[in-house]
Length: 283
Image 1 (cartoon, rainbow, N blue to C red):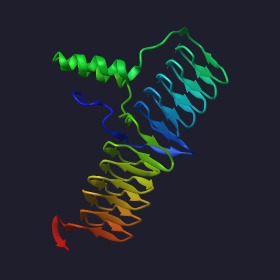
Image 2 (image 1 turned 180 degrees about the vertical axis):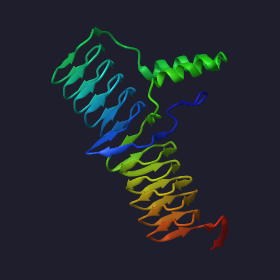
Image 3 (image 1 turned 135 degrees about the vertical axis):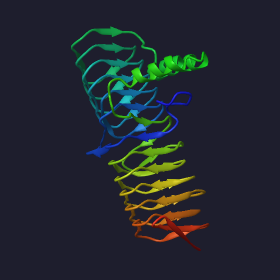
Image 4 (image 1 turned 30 degrees about the horizontal axis):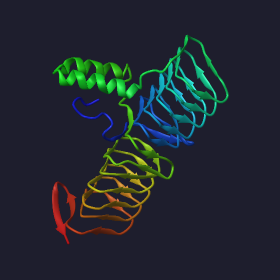
């Protein structure tokens, strides 16, 4: 978590994240900003969702799961430790909790629930709001060390970076739509077109969809894009060994040695091809 900035200011997909049979799967935590729609099921370590988040499948959390006010899950929720459900949360399936259950008013669990620990009925403080208020106060008081310790404690023992979906996002088999930048790690397998302010991939990803951004797009080495790559105002950089199985349209285009584009390349400005640390310009 970066101190002094909004933790939900970008779509961040950590290394090794995959889409498997309509489930979004990661080894680390999952954090979803308020009023977002995730049409996949979700599997991760801890799962935290803000207010009015909608999930299109099951949630499986190895650790804790927290769903804030008016969130909706169309499947089951399976929790390895503790669960926290805010007011008017709706679960279409069954809730299974290995630890304690903290539950708010008017929660609707259609197929019932089971908790092995304590069950407390109240209205828990929204998780993301609570965390951000505490972090903001610590930073305002200049207590950066304390804020850093809190941020580290929120990530728990997981060595993996969290999967972060920003507010008002839509994530589905059809498209991943955010109004923020999107950063994707390495060795990810993603289904759906990606729409973001800017897009950056690291290495060896496989994307079954197109990329579209307002600003720059970076296709990391060894990454394969099964679709078009389009930016309105920015530069497209396709790194060594990457392949685009579609057209590329941009302001400026940079191709590293070994990069492949199967379709048409259109650059309104410069087109540069880098070979052995040298570059040549083409109109």
